Each structure stands twice: as structure tokens, then as C-alpha cells.
Image (cartoon, rainbow, N blue to C red; front, top):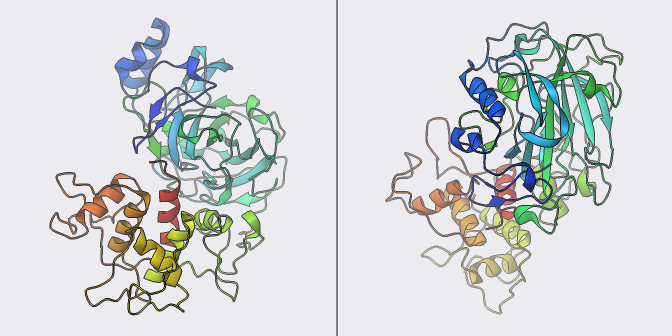
Length: 471
């Protein structure tokens, strides 16, 4: 499900072909909302904006619920449709607002949120919003798409209801492939990987002619426990994500989030005795073949970088070591990262007769990759004529290499984002450019630590985030 044009956080405009008539302005300012809806909706929007956000959470039997209301955001990306947004399907009726109060609307509204991670299906991970039992896990190749339902039990976030979350578009409508990674009856923990964003067959924005990916994520509550079946979502009342996640994701809220990151995940579930028995044992990490047959003995599907590494594996950028490991926590070298960049962009390899660097001879395993990157101006050596391919690549070096490889310009915002990368630092404009394109972030103390080495998992994420950008 898609909405009208929306500028993303990196400046790329996302468009739709199937919902352009459902909305005439971008959510983000109360004035734009008021100008596009009926008077009755205006009153509703203004009343919603005046409500007090959130309530204090209560302690649950399994573990304390976080102050946000018990649920983490299930996936990351651009918000393309908000909860309560007018829509010409679904239905009108009751819903629970951001203060957990029952409300009614007479216009047809979107019962969940759409979060788009990009253009490539099967790459962007989807996580369990809280502890719970998998009530439903099926593939339906229709408008609603693949569906997972999780039962989080009673009183999540102190809501005094039975709480369920629903995840759809977790398959590829073009190929028929399902990206669901859980099974009915399985017990999952908050933040556990349950699958990947798929697509609903819609061509939109900069992803055309290919379909863009997104997750339709709904929260529904009921006064009684639901039976597990394919119609169970219709037996519960839609609830605002604002109450549970601490984010403004409701249509008409002042300055709703334009994009979100997954989490935070802090449990929050209290599964009850429902029609499918609950498996309360802690699931072991699995090493079953993943996307494209990927199987590394040290990379379970619960690893935070699994989706990024699998993307690179499927595009023949990484292959791991001969012993079957990937070594995600191992520091990456300058030679290794140079090779990853060249393979990621599928550049034609350059194989000159004479080497450009004294320590990268013709018979080096990295020779062609380093020469190719050097030819394209991505790397330079040191004053002594060496490249030092075996040295660990630093965070600053990686930022500069990625900015240059994607053709971005150095950027000077006028004031440094990180206190330890001031304007007179050699990496300043490269780090700022990388930050402006959302491929790097800093530490809690406001530092970037440009001299720190970087792991293979971290570089995999940075490279994928760069490759998936269209400008």
C-alpha cells in the first residue's frame, strides 16, 4: 500500500501509482492536513493532537514493559502511510487512540502503518515487536500479502486488552517467494527476526520499474482472546502505534515521524493460554540455509547484520572463508573493503601491467580490485608509495571511500555533527557527507571516533545502505 509523493529523509521523492488519489498533501504539518480533509475530519485531527501522549506502563508477568508502552518498532525505513490516514478501502469504525482511549471515525482509514526500507524485496528485516506466540504465518499472494500474526497476551503496556500485531507484505508478488521465517506455535522474543519486507506489486517512486518494498504493520486489541485463523485480525480493534512505541505515527499528529529505526525491544509480551500451545523454551540460533543458500557457521539468522550480509552474498560481493565462517566481528582490512566496493558496484576490473603501489604487486589477491578503485579515484596510497592493504580500515577511511564510490560530493554543513571531527579534520567533509546520506551514525557521547577500526559486519551494513541509494 502506497501514498502520494513524500520527500524522504535523504531527499529522494517516493511516489505511488495506486494511491495517488487518496491523499493530496504530505503529512507533517497540521495546516496541510486541515486543507485536505472534511470538517468532521478536521475536528477529529484537532482532538487527537490535543490528547496527552502515552500512559505509564505496568509490570507484566514475564518481564517489565518499557515506558514506551511495550512494543518496539518492527522494521526500519520511510513512513509511507500512517495509522488513521484516509484510505478508500478498509473500513470506518472504532479505534484506540494514542492515549488508549476508544474513539470512532466515520471515514475509511488505514488500520496500520506502512514502512518502506527500500527497493529490494527480501533484504530489509522485520522483527517481533514484543515477546509472543506466532498465531499465524502464511503466504497469501494477494493485495494484503504474506501475513504473520503474533499474540502478545494480556495487558501489554498496561492497555487492559489482549494485544496482537500483524505483519503483511512479507513476500514477493512477482516471484511468489515468501520471506516469512517463523512457524505457527513458535515462541518468539522481542527483536527476534521473523522475516523480511516484501512488496505488494506496486511500482512507485525511484524504485520503478521494480516494485518497492514495505511492511504493513498493524496493532489490534480485543477484550477476549482471539482464535488463531486467517480472519483473526478482523475480530480485533485497530490501535494507534503511538501509545505502544513512543513514536508519532498517527495521521494528523503534529510532526509525525518521517522515518523510523527498528526497536527498542524490551520484551513487553505476556502470552496467554491461547488455542495454539505456547513453546516457552528459548529458541536456539539456527544456521539453516538463508537467502541464496547462504550458510555461515558463525552467522545465525538472529544476527543484527544478517540481512545486510545476505544481500551482499546474493549479489556475489562476499563469500566468506574456506572454513565456512564469515567472521562478522573481525576487523576488515583496506584490501578487503576495497574489493567489496568494486564487486558491489560491479565495476569492470582493471589489470595494468605495472602496479600503482609498491606493496600491492601483480600477484596480490587484491591487485585488480585495488587498481580498479585507484583508477576510479576511490582510493589513494600513502606518501611512501604504499597502500597498506593489510591494515585495518578506519571509520573515517570507510566513510570517504563510500562517498567517493557513490559519486556524492564532500559536504560542509557549517557546523560539525560530531565533536571529534571538527572542520579542520581531513575527514570532516567526507564524514559529514556520509552522515547526510544516513550511512553512518555516531556514539551516544556525540563522537564519531574516526580512527576506530571497523568490523566486517559494520562495513557490510554501510555498503548495503550506500548501494541501495539512488542518488
